[in-house]
Each structure stands twice: as structure tokens, then as C-alpha cells.
Image 1 (cartoon, rainbow, N blue to C red):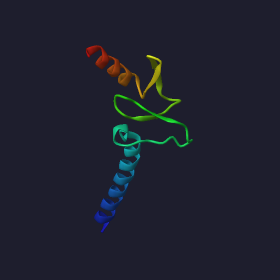
Image 2: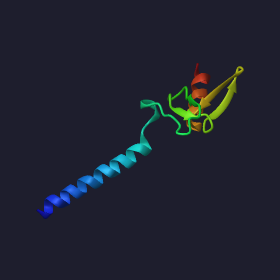
Image 3: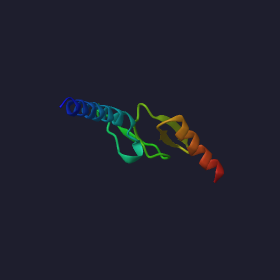
Length: 84
């Protein structure tokens, strides 16, 4: 009986940890995120992650603004353009 209770508690802890870690690590490629405050969301052209416009890295190109979720995505974008 103790073994079953212990296994059940371990399983519950596992589910809680999985849920908490899952929320923190969900990749933006697989889902579109909405900012809770209702702010405008912009899409990164490299990884297609949606980020709040206030947190995005902006780069002006040819009169247009391109938004990136991170510095590595911006670097990959310009590396790909240089290679073409």
C-alpha cells in the first residue's frame, strides 16, 4: 500500500514538473503566442516565432521594419541574405 501511495505521489510530482517546464520551453515555431496585455505581436521571419512588438529586435531594411525574436535569429537572417 505504501508503495502505491509513493508511486502515485511521484507521478503527481512528475506531471506538475512536466507542466511547469513545458510552459517555459514551448517552441514558438509550433504555436502562436498572444501577449496577455493585448499588445501587437510580430513574427520573426527566421523561426516564425511570434513575439510582442515591445520585446522584438527591430531592423530597418529598404524602408521596411523587420522584427526578430532574438539576436541569433537576426544573425541567421542576414547570414542567409549574404549567402544568396
